[in-house]
Amino acid sequence: MILIVAFVRFLVALFLVRIGLRFVAGLVEGLREPPAATPAPGVDMVRDRICNTFLPRERAVSAVVGGRQMHFCSPACRDRALALPPGP
Image (cartoon, rainbow, N blue to C red):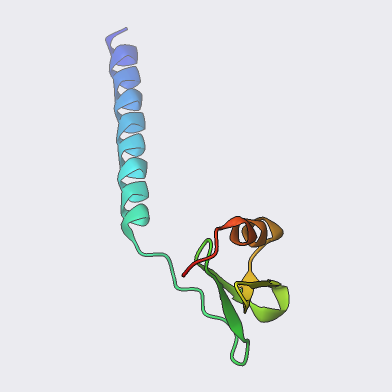
């Protein structure tokens, strides 16, 4: 009976150590900087000034806002820009 209790305690201890190690590994992975996404050479990138993202020009949604041609990542960002009051 004592051997069974000792074996169960050993298994529980191993389980807790494994959980602890996975937790620490997750923390270390989370602290690493994500790799910078670099576009393929020759791809023209544009910036969506509403959500501050960059995307290839051919995927961008374009609109004239305040007399300037602007590019957006989605129709929702375009609509937000069109709804903004005109700047000075």
